[in-house]
Amino acid sequence: MQSLVDGFGRRFHYLRLSLTEVCNFRCTYCLPDGYRKSGSMNFLTPQEAERVVRAFAGFGVGKVRLTGGEPSVRRDLSEIIARTAQVPGVGKVCITTNGWNLERQIAPWREAGLTNLNVSIDSLDRETFRQITGHDRLASVVRGLDRALALGVPTVKVNGVLLRESVDAGFDAFADFVRDRPIAVRFIELMRTGDNAEYFAAHHAPGRRLTDWLEARGWARRERAFDDGPAIEFTHPDHAGRIGLIAPYAPSFCDGCNRLRVTARGQLRLCLFGELGVDLRDLLQADATEALQARIRQALVGKPAGHRLHEADSGDTRQLAQFGG
Ligand code: SAM
Ligand code: SF4
Image 1 (cartoon, rainbow, N blue to C red):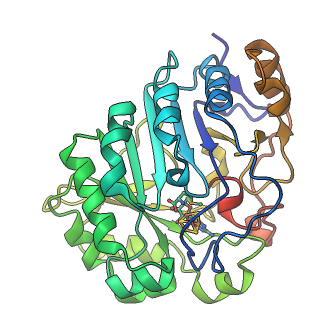
Image 2: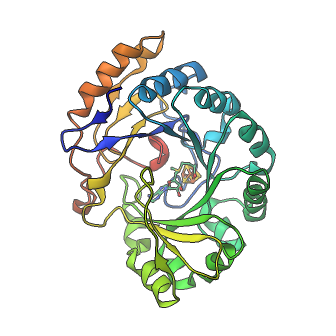
């Protein structure tokens, strides 16, 4: 089996597949006015999604993350999870969700073959959560997460966006949250996108503020696994879980890039903050794995060395819901 390698020797064994641009939350840094329909809502069908996964699995991609927009707005999500889980070679079927109705949905997802759940929780304070997402649903999201743990979902993580106000509030609530829960909470530095420049200027906080906080309280850096994302994680002897940081502005962040993205409209995105994409949709209408793989391989030649966020260049990414964060 040939693996996917780009011009910089980076190997790709992780696919992020967006299933929709639609979202039911209004996160202040992403879709502050809520989702606004743009273009047709002609997103990948379960069969098209499966064909994408088969093509990547043929390159040794064993980890697939279903994302969006909010993937759980799709009624056929369990079917897509099941189709993904059944593709030979795919060992990890992951989802990134805002946790809406997680309590109700997690059992069928688990039954369909979900192995990794990432739930986005930016604050554990009810009012701050409501202000950020537009929904007073923190308690329900946390119940959903606990239900996932009770059901034995092998890997459960929390993603939080690192905002200036989170730094000011301190991270004690998150440290308490992982005292008995064997999960990782990873903060991601706020990224500047086409739509959020003003918000970014007012709310971005450097990741060092989190790592300083952790190190001052006895948290220690942990070794990384082969198909881990770019998070640096910290452990503490008194806590079952971990706290981590994803720092897209760190020097050499892109050197370890191991993921490719396919959008809900069937475009291959080589970089989250790149320009345009390579259309795969015409090759998803029938089983055409070889042709699809040839196009993917050819496209990879054009993968840039890294993003240009430092130069305040977000490519054509207006917000992360657009291509799958
Ligand atoms: N709706 C799902 C969710 O929120 O988990 C999946 C899609 S969302 C775009 C994926 C992740 O990107 C979320 O954890 C979200 O917090 C994060 N995100 C969105 N916009 C961001 C930004 N400008 N900077 C950093 N993270 C961002
Ligand atoms: Fe929706 Fe996720 Fe964006 Fe929040 S971060 S608005 S939940 S897509």
